[in-house]
Image (tube, rainbow, N blue to C red):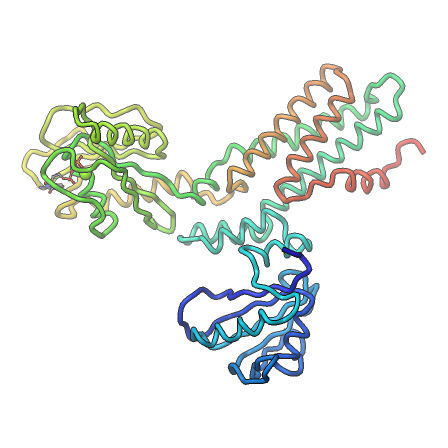
Length: 436
Ligand SMILES: Nc1nc2c(ncn2[C@@H]2O[C@H](COP(=O)(O)OP(=O)(O)OP(=O)(O)O)[C@@H](O)[C@H]2O)c(=O)[nH]1
Ligand SMILES: [Mg+2]
C-alpha cells in the first residue's frame, strides 16, 4: 500500500442512516472534488453540491461538501469530506465513483490517523487518546481520554525527555572536555540534581495505577460457596438475566462478565463457579477458573449464604464479605454488608460501596499512564536513570553512565514516538557554551 495514494473511507459507521460521512485524504483530494462536485469551495466552508459520476456525469446524490487543504487538516494532507445521504445504494454508488479515480483507494484501518502521526499532527500518546475516546464507555473514561488527546502524557514525556537529554549533553560535554574522564565538580552536582528530579517525577507517575484501571475497568469478582446467590446478585446488578440461577449447587461453571457504569466509572463484574471440592471434572475446571479470577481481581465480594457451614475465602488483594439472602429469617452478623438480591434489599448500599471502592482506586484523575505500553517504557527509563546515577556517584565509567542516560531518553521517546535522540542533542549542544 502506497503512502502517497489518496485514500477514502466512510467515517460514520455502517448500516442505513440519515447522513453518511465520507472522508478523503491525499494529493488527489482536490481533483476528485472538482470532477465530482464542480468548483472546489473555499477552505473549511460547507456547501451543498450535486455529486456526479466522473465517467458518465450521472448525478449520484445531493451532498454537503468540505475542502480542507493541508497542512491544516487532520491528516496534514489535502482532505475533503462528503456528507452524503446514508442509503445503502447511495453510499455504494459514491464509493464506486471514488474508487474509479487513479491512485485512489479505500483506506486501511487506522490509516487516516497513521498519516496524522507520520505528518507530525499528533504524537503516539495522542493517537492512543483518540482510540480511547472512540472506545470510552463511561464519563470518567471519556474525560481521561480527552486529557490524553490534549497531550497530558505526551507533554510530560517530552519534558522528561528534554531534561534527560540535557543531562546527556552535560555528560558528553564532560567526556569531551575533561582529561581524567571525570565530570567537573561544579557540573556533577547539577547532573545528580537533575537525575533525581526526573527520576522522582517518573517514579511518581509509575506509582499511580489509576489511569490503567480507569481505561480497562475495575474488576469485581463475585465468589463464594455454591448456592450463595452469586448469579442472582450478578443478574440484579446487571439488571438483566445474564447468568442461570438454580437451587442446584454448582450451577455456574464458566466465568460470566458484565460491564457496568458505576457513577461514571467502568466496572467489570464477574460471576464465578461456587467454590467446593468436586469429583466432576467440569466443575473442577470452573472452580480453578474462579480461583484464578479472584487472584487477578481488584476487589472480591465473598458471598456467604445464611445456611451452610463457615467458608474460608481465598487470600486476595481486597475482599468484602457480603451476607446473602438477607430476606430469610436466619441472617448473618459477621459480614461487611447484607443483601437480598432476590428482593433488592441492601442493593443500593452495595452499589454505593462499590462506587466508593471504584472512586478510591481510580477516581483521582491525575494519572498520566493509561496503558501497559507507557508503564513498560517508563520502567525502562527509570531503571536506566537509577543505574546512571549509581555509576556517577560511585565514579564508574562516564561512558557507561552516558549510555544509560541515552537509553532512558530512547525509552521515554517511545511514548510519543519521538526517538530521534541525535537531532535533539545537536540542537541542545548548539545552545551550549562549554569551552569553545
Ligand atoms: N430467598 C432468597 N433466595 C435467594 C436469594 N438469592 C439467591 N437465592 C436462591 O438461592 C439459590 C442459588 O442461587 P444462585 O444465584 O444460583 O447461586 P450461585 O451462588 O450462583 O450458585 P452456583 O452457581 O451453584 O455456585 C437459587 O435458588 C436462588 O433463587 C435471595 O436473596 N433470597
Ligand atoms: Mg451461579
